[in-house]
Length: 313
Image (tube, rainbow, N blue to C red; front, top):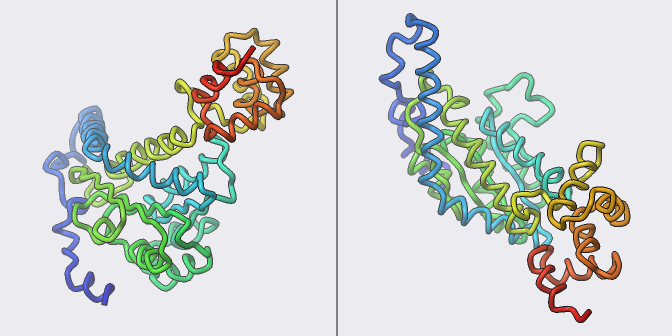
């Protein structure tokens, strides 16, 4: 019934904003290259400005995802085509940027991640594959899913949403057409009503730009909710190369005001972890004390500082 209803009620591609023709694109192929570039750039800026209309929904979505992760659940990103690639990129960044356990992040892309060099468009229509992927992921009520589609009508993504709802998984949808089925059925809907593309239907452009901005904001807010951001610094970064090891030392020094040599010693003592290193520099008696304090304060440094200030001596 779900699938039949939407097949009978979906607007034609011509009536969808993402498939409409922009009046600014008339004659662009014959125009001066600099004028054409300005038109393309203006289209990107207009799309980017649309994201401001979705702040409340992005805030709600990020809180939902953070609550899931803090309780030990899984955050799954689902998508197809260029929108799916943007979703996967955002998901891949979470462990490195915010130190989130990679086992808590799953990525589901139509056609499979390993086959994206071909960008097989037919996979976007494979509803059975979507259902199978969700079933295989073993998701349930403790988990959360972010589904991304420019049109909001992509069969793979809509079918994945149905399977997720059947599993009791919390769902967040991000799309660029208002009242699309993906938005109508999700627990939290993020609509980015971007204007028609300068290259009609090429949603890797304006729609993709707005999606990338919204995804960046979503994942950064998730990191903030989890206590992994302090004064704009990535305090849960995984320092697994020389650049990031130096960044960890710099972060400890910036937050605590201690010399870099001392910060390096604290980072080494903390096994490369920034938060406990910061607390050691702030006066925590031992690494065990620092870790206990973080556990008691939800991993948030600001609250740990208040606890340290209340400690005798």
